[in-house]
Structure formats: C-alpha cells, structure tokens
Image (cartoon, rainbow, N blue to C red):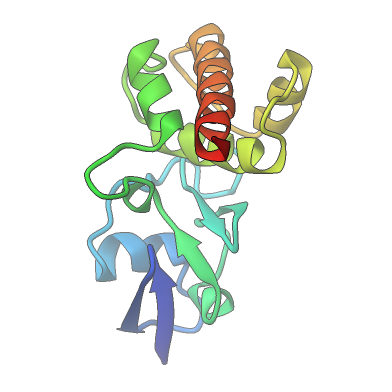
Amino acid sequence: MSLALLVNGIEHKVDAAPDQSLLSVLRDNLNLTGTKYGCGEGQCGACTVLLNGRPMRSCRTLASSAAGKSITTIEGLEQNGRLHPVQEAFLKVEAFECGYCTSGMIMSAVALLKQNPSPSESEVREFMKGNVCRCCTYPRILQAVRVASTRAVERSVEQAR
C-alpha cells in the first residue's frame, strides 16, 4: 500500500504493508534511525515519536494510521542548525549513559513541556513513567527536563519583549 507520511515537515511517499509499524517505516524506508526499537511492545518508550504533537509508541502504531498526521522524530527537533531546548538540556546535564533511551525520553519531554511548560517534579515523573532507562540515569533526566523547562520560560520572556 502506498502512504503519504508527513515526517518532520516533509511529505514522503512510501510503500508499506498494511500491518507495518511506523517505527519500521521510519527506520527502514526513510532511514530515520534516531527512533529506536526497544521492546517492540510499546512498554519501554525508546520508539517514542510525536504524532500531531502527542507522544506515541511507533513500534505499536501502524504506519497507515499515521498517514495524514504530522509525525515528528528526534531528527525533526533541530531547527536551523539549533538543537531543541530539551536536546540542549540533555547534553548539558549529561542525562544519558548508553543513549539508547535518550531519543524517546527527549520526545516525551518535548511533549510534556509543550503541554505544561513548567511542570513539577511529580508531574515530570508521572508523564515520563512510560519511558524506561536501563542505565538508571533518572535523576539526570529529571534535571534535564527542569533545565529545559527553565530555558523554555526564558525564551518565551525574550520573545515577548
């Protein structure tokens, strides 16, 4: 089946089987390998992408169900050579070890901060609980989300001036 997918602002025509996951289309057809295969069951969050701005597990999402929707992957966060504030914060506080979960963590954090620019620690924990880090860098991940939140507030103040 032929699909038109809007990925990172660019429309792509892809041939996909009716039961093919969005994850496999992103990785295998579009060569967007930042989205990772983790558990294949939607439980670990490594494959998280934004679908119309909402975090979705791409391993459990059919590519056909994403047609006509805006898909954002980790590769789509950078704009004009500049990293997204969440990406910057993860680098600043070194919120990763092996890095396998990082893209999914970042995508979930981006969705959270879009919905709630200044979340409490308990709100961050609740929102991110579906993302698993086997290296257990959770304290640094929480710190990165707080740093990104602060930076997002600073940017909105700068833009309002």
